Length: 357
Ligand SMILES: NC(=O)c1ccc[n+]([C@@H]2O[C@H](COP(=O)([O-])OP(=O)(O)OC[C@H]3O[C@@H](n4cnc5c(N)ncnc54)[C@H](O)[C@@H]3O)[C@@H](O)[C@H]2O)c1
Image 1 (cartoon, rainbow, N blue to C red):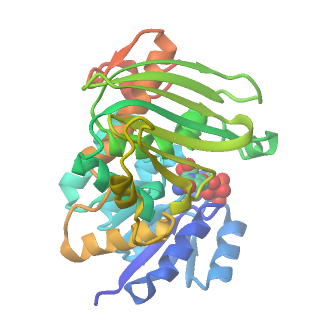
Image 2 (image 1 turned 60 degrees about the vertical axis):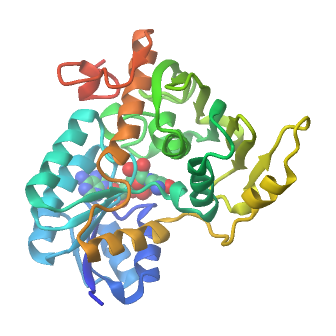
């Protein structure tokens, strides 16, 4: 068994989930260094987690650490440059969502992957719970028929202190609002289940808090087979809930939760007029029961490193949500529908989610 040398960039809130993931991987990963621009924070983080070296400069850390894997948990606006810097230092990358600020940045990261032969896996832990993995298989098996209607709502709440962190609420550093930071988990999950979207209409609003970015977006999405979905992302909803509901021809599949979900948050229903208890019993039978987490995703990333193969949530499977979000914002800010694949170099929404506004 190989033990990979890991380093982490950004030692704030979500970095704790990465440490738990590294510890859960046992002897497969040894954390050798951490970096943050806040010296007191990174020093305390290293002491708490028994990490031998701390740095306040990512280049200095990458030169010294000889890391095989770099976890990126810094503010979103820094991810692209730090991911490329890590690839160029010879490491694979496990980068927090959102991976980057724009399609332009995504394409720069892909170019660096091709050049270095290393890969970046975006954290989307919602894909890694037992129920989501099971639902994906049931959908692909096709017994429920085609999707007709869906609702994908992330209705969460972020109070004023959340935005006192300097990088929050700004296009340059957070790269968007409720849509890219909160709703992205459920939208990514939905589009992993049902990737063939074609056209989007949307609106965005900043209705509260002294921020530049959105705290509400709403979208209507049409899929290749004609299915329609409504998608809402909010940071202003006091009773917090995520709800994904997919109505297929022969069954409704839904999850209602405040993250993280377990199997009990998922439900299958067949039409009252055509009950199908045998299929329901099969669909509802999920053998294991665990939540998605950075820890579960990390194991799959390490397996890919062992095989020197493309890891989960990389390439087109990672670009999908970056393009979808660029399209959602373009539709909202231009008041025009946007078709999939239409945002290309030269389009101002290729360069950034706010289209340079
Ligand atoms: N997967 C999830 O469920 C999840 C949850 C929370 C956050 N996130 C993502 O993780 C990232 C960090 O979020 P957070 O909540 O931990 O933020 P945070 O503000 O708690 O921590 C960010 C840390 O990055 C440091 N930092 C600032 N500039 C830096 C730079 N140039 N280089 C290195 N470090 C720098 C800050 O000092 C801070 O310690 C964001 O992209 C966020 O979207 C993901």
